[in-house]
Amino acid sequence: MPIFQFSQDVAIDMGTCNTRIYVKNKGIVINEASMLVLRVSGRHSPVVAIGDSCEEFVGRSNSEYKVVRPIRSGIIVDYENAQIMLHYLLTKAIGSRFTFKPRAIVTIPGLANAVQRQSLINVLGKSGVRQIHVVEQSYAAAIAENNAGKNEKATFVVDIGAGTTEAALISLDGTVASRSAQMGGDLIDETIREHLDRRYGIEITERIAEQIKYDLTDVREEENQDRIAVVRGRDKATGMPFTQDVKTSEICRAIHPVLMNIIGEIRQVLEMTPPELCEDIMRGGIILTGGSAQLPGLDALIVDELGIPVSVGRVAEESTILGAGAMADHFEEIVGQNQTGKPNG
Image (cartoon, rainbow, N blue to C red; front, side, top):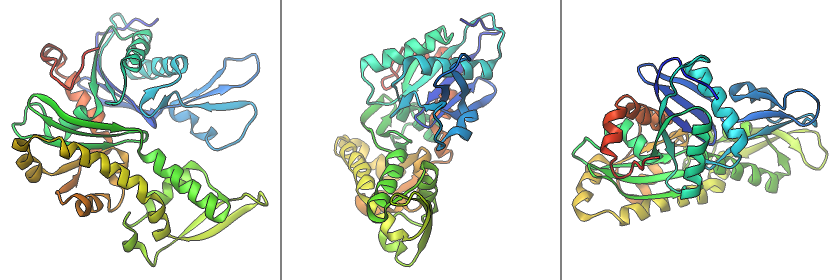
């Protein structure tokens, strides 16, 4: 187990897609893929690559190696490999020689149960963290975007990550109402892949699906009637490379149910909102954070469906880690307050 040269306060966001680490007074120092590559057989170390160095293995079939993603929907599903990954990334973030173990603010989805929360705490402890304070992702995102917890006005934030969507209303007293669901960017990508497979018999990689998603000019079908996307993949019938022209409006129609389910989560939180906070929401609107918050036209679609102002966060993709980082910058104060919505580890 490592020992740390200086006692450093850090923030950790172990996401489905990426793991980010923020070091006090330094900012985000790690933003790498949440994955490992293991050697299936042989006498050498089973771990071949961790983090961004795994990218060259993704999407390439090989009987000697396998890609492992220890985080699913923001939850640890592979304890041992999650610990190996985090230990490596922490060491990379703060150095290999230390005298004092760091303290950490760590984010977790609101849907996590007590067992899953404890697994996260155990992984951090095994990785060398001496004091752990757990905060829900939506609360951390609200801290970054609107200084929630100190702002007198309530903040409504919707964090759409790769594996989860968190919708939460945050006020001075913490989280007033929230919903968390296992849907996000990965589900949208998978929906695109399944549609192209079913309709055209073409197989595409995760990367191509993600590219198609972000190449849309608008997620609303009616805004994409005449646009064509050139999709390259593999013909299932022949196994040969294949190119297919697809209307982007068709892609929008395929992912529409997923987007409407996300909007349904938002609607349920709105229905739980106390009347005295409704004015704050109408004035401040809904703030979208997370990687998929930047889907073209998603903000307009939510406005169309809910009639409430919507904006994409200033630091949308990094809101969660920056909010947790702001808390790590004031660790003593934050842990002492232990506000609602920021459960202690």
